[in-house]
Length: 207
Image (tube, rainbow, N blue to C red):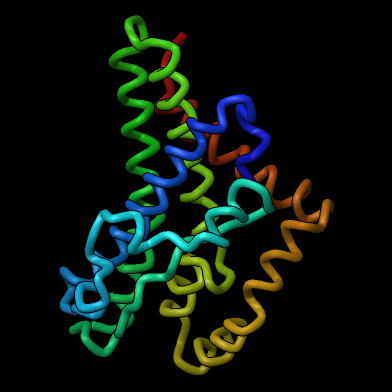
């Protein structure tokens, strides 16, 4: 989903995606740990070490396919004092970490706009763009994305069980949706563009 942006600057995208995915998964692990679930800690996922979070196929797919992924952080809701709220906050932590990274990149661009070099300026811009994509993409309410965990835990128990049946089909539906031009052009592209325009319009550098 990012391969058409600054294709001549592959190194910028590689650095940004690598860092963003690691922080995204770390945010899930740290939030679950803070809320009482030590599963991620015991699984070695409460770390910023990329090797603990990245999956080779998922990383390759981000660069050369329509979608990609990192290894999901294991979470046991039974360890939360309030399981539903704990799952919602843990799921939300990943996309929010990407939004914070995007805003941080834009803030640095604003502060350093007149003095930042081309390398750092491009890296910060790509960082903001990629993290906007990661934030809104992961909020899509289809399994296995974070949005499905949020929506599922907001539903009444009976509806939650029905919604959970999407788990086995969700990845295929998501992949198919990204491969279908009408869905790509009429749903995802406007959604991503709207979010980019919102974030960059409010927080982007004034030129």
